Image (tube, rainbow, N blue to C red; front, side, top):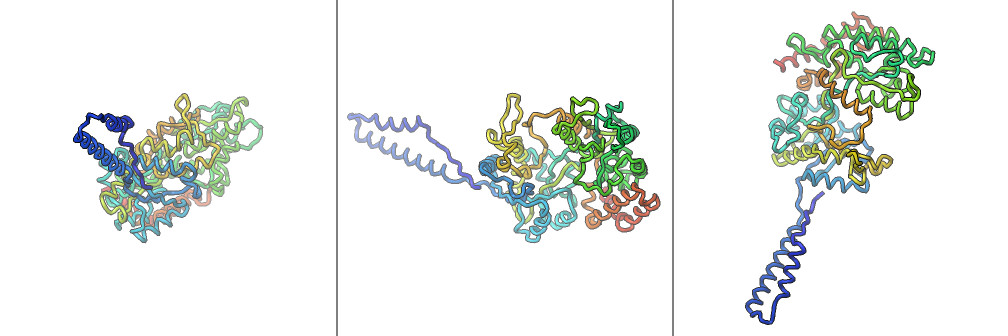
Length: 533
């Protein structure tokens, strides 16, 4: 979108002054005076016309092409106000951006195809999740701009230069930062539980692993819903095994990897790992989690808590809050006081530990083949930096004031497009252009419920206890992990599931560990620690 900067350079008073000057000639004016005035008027007219013509000349912004994820089935940035919103975005950033929307399920395929023809690569490319072997290989071949020195410039890039150094290391290949992460809350994981169930059974907020076990047992066997039937199970669980990863940290396990005696090792080589698995095995054998958890599909995750089958939910804290929202929105009565709604409590840690997120989900790379001059690199980085400004966070989160939202007397956002998908489509998807550095949320927000306030506070507290994965910066530079890591990690996870469910014994579990070591994990461990040294 090319912009024209149109300006009225002469005020009404100036125009009137010129007109008045021409009307003040008298019969006593000499021919020379008249000639002079006519010349001055002609000069002024010529100057004004020249200036106005210059003002009408379009001033072109630097152009940037951007491959972005479309989660809206082709409806991202569409509708009556889409052009107006895009114009505001481009005027703020000073960049003419050409967005190539790509469906998430074909993103990797599209990106791979683009890399096969380097000159066709968008200047900015979006990648989902964490760094893959494909990206590492491409980075080693010089596919992406080294951003290391650029992102130190706090004058040009006041937002991006404030990136979290530890998170940024996860996007470093051969000592070069090849991407800009899309920030996420570090302290997002925790434990949530039915507070009304706990209150009915006289249970206080759990602090230790033993407290959690006691809660799970009583939620299973002491009729927490008071219906006189044996129809409750302590913990929510499906084939998604993330809760095990979180609970392992309570026992002193690392997050994927841990530093032990100055060496980085995968957590399944820690003594605490087997201790944690034996505890999970106990929960399973005593019926404190669903017996068919391993075959329950992940799309049913949280259904057990919502339907009153389970009372403990271990995953992202916003997931626990959404279960609470469900109780309120569907008027599910509390088992303690039916005049109130059922509720959840959210916990930041157990025994002073929880699992940290990677600090990001997805990232942007700059293509070396199309960002092939310092000016083009600067244009791309300028766009990404300015998209993190408060104004752009507001625009991409809420759309246009007066169209999509208004501000109430308390300074909170009131959405006007809640029931109008066509209005929401005007700015839908534009949040996919934002790195959220240094701020994930804008100051502008909707009025928060008691539930949302608790979630925010608990997440902030969880950061103090969140165990990070110390190997992340090194795993992406391990050639063996890039080629075999996912398959080997899957085998470790499968063995954990089999052990918990009693399909293999401890000897079988350790045999599985030995097998993955022989298949390549010993090399991965060596490659990681060689980088550390």
